[in-house]
Image (cartoon, rainbow, N blue to C red):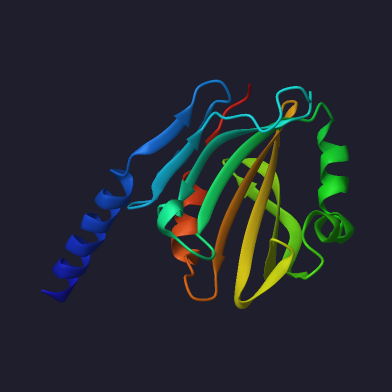
Length: 187
């Protein structure tokens, strides 16, 4: 009887995860499952149109409506940038801890990585940093923020996937499931 209950629970959970809606971007041939209960906030919005190396937002999810939220809002952000370099240059650049220290605020520390990972069969670089956010020139001393970033080089583009949460609201299981659901095809 216990074995039957276990099998039934496994099938029910598998069906729930697989039936989750996905967000797709046809231009970048990118898809990822949507986090249940999160708010889709940006779709296909460029940061800087006049800059040829601009990052374009593919999709952003926020845990809460940011208008009603004070403090850190856990976020999932996917962007793409034209990089135009080969994979060797990409790997050398993002595997250096100095890149991650420069990229993040000085009060952030690397807690994991940088290291290679595989996303959808493609080599990626991942790094997790943790620290206190600076807002309006003041450091928020109440909450530590954790950012796990993945950089995936496909053709002449870099896909940047950033998962942000904090010590009070941690989503590692959800973030791992979403990372495993990512599909990026050749452009």
